[in-house]
Image (cartoon, rainbow over all chains, first blue to last red; front, side):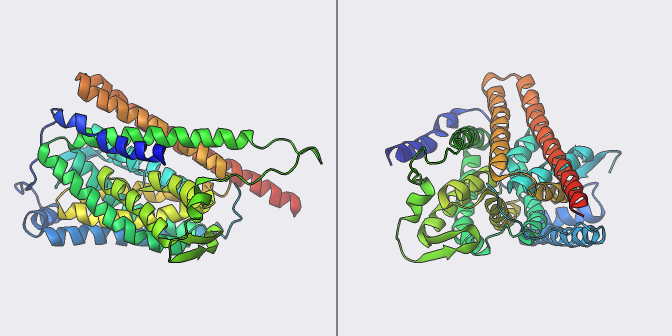
Length: 92
Length: 348
């Protein structure tokens, strides 16, 4: 228990000395420069600048849809190649 | 796109497509094999190659989200996902991720986010790596040759997971997929709360903390820990992806390119778990995170000493470590598949 407490305190205190380091702060409200952008890049930049919630939804849904589609396609392809996986016995 | 470079409209920079694909492929292999998001490789790598740290974190979480869907689906087919345990993880993890993400934003106001994240990274990577390597050594030493009747059977060792299982805080739950009779839901939620916080703070899917937690604190078999960890990573990364995108720190184009590479890698990694024993996975995991810790230390040294070369070296270390480990996992898969085919031909 004592060891666990020491670990937790160490973890909490460790970052504080570096608060004095010199890495510059990043602008919290970042806006994308849309000059020269077109097509999907422009649409994304527009969502990012003007409709942040929509940008977040598009980002999350795009990643999920791509993941699901790829998983499905790969399963079909591997199945056709005879590389189906089944339940395993767990060995340590 | 110009040649092998792609313009990233949100991060407002050009980036190498092969580098993004290669990173995706490597962490895909490692993610499928170890049940981790692989952010401890990708976040520092993206940061080293020019991404602002908070952008690297957000973009990485987005790609981890997509990749985890692919790898989790595969692991669930192999019976490696404890769904009940995974679902409980949502409660603790989502709260933890948000607290972690808010901490990053608070540190960003002060202007020290990169440095603080690197210190915490180093502490965790070295600590967990050393513990797992020590556990592997202890486990391999504790297998003496059996001498019939020579020694009285020893008492089963009181592990950390045994101690936690003995905490009878209601409600209790049984986890048959993980081979656990009774464990407190409160204990599980508390573990996931901490791993969720680290996930949001470090921009990791949570796997590199979660995998050891599931093995040593909850007591899952290694393969189930890998699959269940991926399910938890999926939820955490999904929430983290949305949260960072809302804060404007996610580059969708880069995440999608990385996902293309990771899709192939994840298949290799998941299939390789069929041919490597649990303790083998633990040892390789320990080696991998210690190497990642070396890379992050070099990056921190670069900031403290102001020598740019050390930062470049850190990039090469993390990429070489990820590349070598991915290659090793791929070789294990090929080796195992060949042996399996030979055996099936022999038995036929």
